[in-house]
Image (tube, rainbow, N blue to C red; front, top):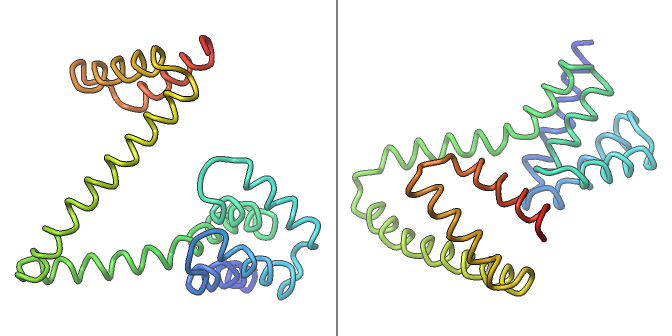
Length: 177
């Protein structure tokens, strides 16, 4: 069984390393490991898992890894597969954060962050504007203003957790729109 756990780990870790670009880039690599190399599933079964993973919210690779890991190695296999899927990003993130922490007092790093902050602010502003415009086109000005104003008041003035505000907007849209 230990060999099976190692195979589960390798079958999801390697696509996580070489599958640069997220789920769409890594799916064929995972399929090659799961179907081609280890024969844990047929192509048909893998396509059904892919369809199921696509229908659920969240990153596609972690959902597929959980399913494949569970099918092959039970709960421990699911945990190993999910960990192996996120481990490459986790390792790179830890390395980059350590580098950033090591050089945080460097004038070059400070200059880079000075340039990055406005870019992020502009991108977030553009995204918010696009969401507002698409909402306005989809549900009309009145509902858009009601949801935006209520969200602002609930989050900024009353200090309600944004998750509850999102849930409330979801219910408002479901019941009234």
